[in-house]
Length: 138
Image (cartoon, rainbow, N blue to C red; front, top):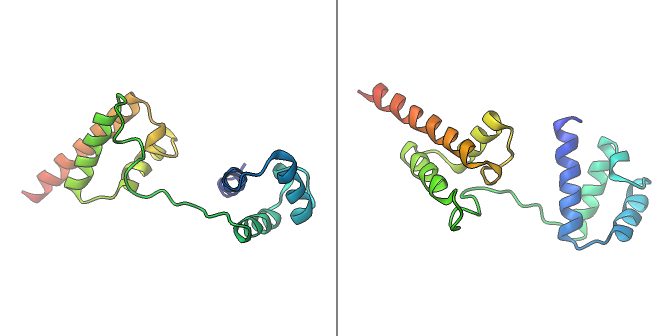
């Protein structure tokens, strides 16, 4: 499945949940808007049509920017996320930079999904980057 299709199907399912649609209502909407019984049957054109319809009835897509939602928790990874935050701030980089590292290094869509070991790898990469920047400035 191509990346765009996967992303659009995910948005459709997020909209279903956000709008509080039960399964029967959701399937009826798919049938009415796109003439299919399942989102897996949608084409590129009908996915766009369904997304437009969902936006018209109240779906509000949310772009996750900035600090991960679980950074302030008491979970074991909160310290690691704080360290990542400090390294990003020192480098003048946004949270999206670390999120892209998680995607590139571990195939994770967000830092929230990284394990402690994976976060340690991201910290190590950011520390190496900081050392390179320091050496380049001297």
